[in-house]
Length: 231
Ligand code: ADP
Ligand code: ADP
Image (cartoon, rainbow, N blue to C red; front, side, top):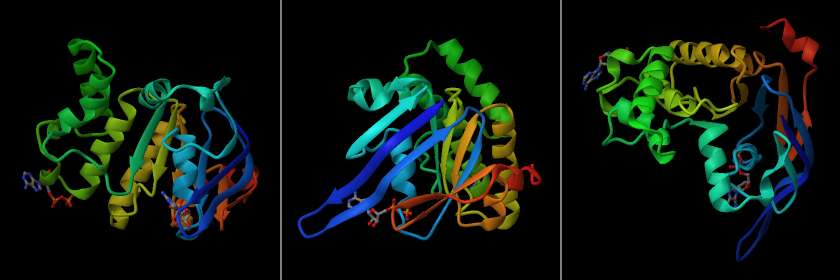
């Protein structure tokens, strides 16, 4: 579903040139679960942002479902981000003024879907993440785990084929972290491709593949058969 070749990312500032990601090639099939590990500053977030079309690489090719997405206009990229790609962040990034319902509905509003379609999808998604009885709560009225479930619902409501999660359990205690992880695994089992940055080796091992990034260099770390035992 996803193929990248010779992708490179650097940042030029006044004083220094950072090579955030060295040239890499990558192929991902629909439904895979891949963990992304590596020290802070290694390039993990940059990597996810490039996959999610939030950042442009300096060069390279990127085919998403056979389409050369880097050649697309900004508005076409934005549309893809709203349909095929879902993002989850460590800090939830919910809009504080909106209820859980309003937050989850937002991506569908951007897509100008009709009200009854939006309602149907939002309620279905809130049920799936176990938040239906919190629909009218504001984010500050929720526990951390509930806020992350709301953020997951917002990422899922557009029915993306790929979910990009940047340390989704980084702000949660171990019990909440397990809950969120099992929700993400369910979503993955239903066919959504999952890429997850994590610092937790136990969580990383739940994936079929692990990509390690060090100083901007990507390395595939463990064989598929190794992780198969953990599923
Ligand atoms: P990680 O997610 O692994 O902590 P990042 O992808 O955030 O790493 O960062 C990789 C490297 O790119 C770091 O050296 C960081 O300082 C640099 N970097 C990230 N974003 C920018 C930016 N907007 N401008 C300049 N340098 C950046
Ligand atoms: P957790 O045990 O998951 O950390 P909390 O102890 O923070 O949860 O909250 C317990 C329940 O009370 C949660 O289901 C949450 O929705 C609700 N709650 C917490 N804070 C508020 C609040 N300020 N207003 C309304 N409901 C709240």
